[in-house]
Image (cartoon, rainbow, N blue to C red):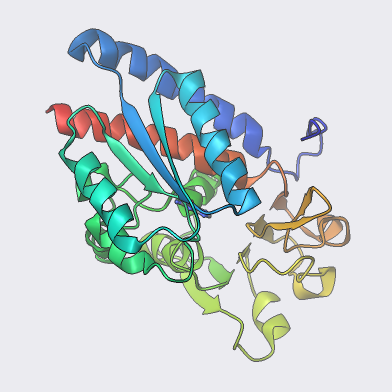
Length: 290
Ligand code: GUN
């Protein structure tokens, strides 16, 4: 991957800088944790199949773990692996006291039921926040482990002292990984939230009303300037890989002149997601050491 240019435009959210700050805090706390408990926080990742972006994301997660002093264990499986085998590993990891966090990289192959798998991760080791108990807690406003990408968005808003209370938020995309949890977490912070998706009619008329627009569809360049309100805050969460490069869901150059703030792709929510995962792994280690 080629290095990203430095962010100098004040409208552009520098996700890498926010991530580095989070990582620096985690690293310090990990050192304290190790001194107090004599063990290092540890994360186990599970990757099934050969999906190249997933392989890269998992590698980036292991690199981040190394940077902050977290042990990481890499479990890779071929595409045709049976669901039972993955569940067997999760149950083994649940029982191992020296493993504090478990992450199953999504998407999983079609023959594996993601929901069944997520249900098996112990809620206290569920650093991705995909277990239904943690999802349910988020739903009732008692956020524990929540999905890392929406949490990164909330963190970025905090960095810029933006309180979403009363703001019009439009989320485009209704996945369990980003769209739905982002909507609920912003609702928990008293924003007025609308979720649009592939079946929504007249997307433009909805997105034009957004003070905060979160786009997570995987459709390259879906959002153009005419779909964005003047002075909006835009989070581009989409990722499309083409010719070894990544593209977001937002036509960045087109939209930039209209926005107050925008998170770019790459260098926006991606690095923040990974930093939050590190924070969660430390948090999981603390909970399990109480
Ligand atoms: N695939 C895309 N985003 C994520 C994520 O945040 N966590 C996991 N486990 N898989 C993903």
